[in-house]
Length: 239
Image 1 (cartoon, rainbow, N blue to C red):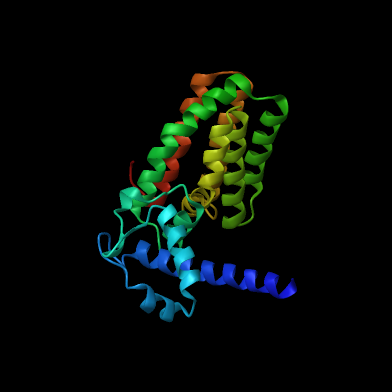
Image 2: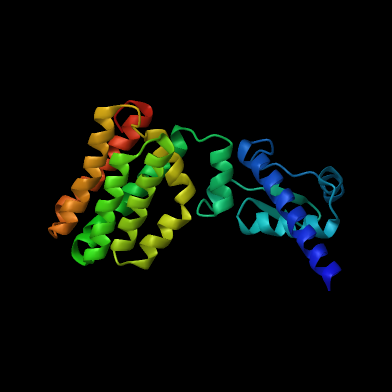
């Protein structure tokens, strides 16, 4: 029984090793979209794993939409439009290999589509405890003593807002893209610039205030402004 457990853990570790290795290579373009991956024998030798472990890794990448196997042809890398960007691994691979302006613009577009409406819903549905949590997160941003802590407080605010919307789908989306959000917040953090630090925390506090006074329009507008200013801080140019 013990040997079986150890073997299972080893296989899972090897499986993760192959999935992460190939996944990152696909994201970086080492294996370009539309091209065929090397054959199973070559990949198994390269990663030092069994054919069984390799097949399971390929199934995982297929489920993420990154590759498609074809009988008698081979395994082809799919177009990026087929990749599941809500998959935690796929998001992390993008982040680890370096996000660019296109990735962050797409993330910003999605935030515009979701977060202002989440703020609107929160103004209608948030409980007193949820509103208190939003204020607490804004206070954490004000008191943050490092770029990391500022970004984490920023993330907590936005996830708390998604929860305060009363819509479980909103919260699920926030949790799914958490890694992308925190990367964006680290890049847009005004920590080290005293005036901007205070102003950004206050911008978030305005969202909480609008929610507290049950003003959906103001809450939505305040959220749009936070998203806009965050993007502009990263690239120092209008969205």
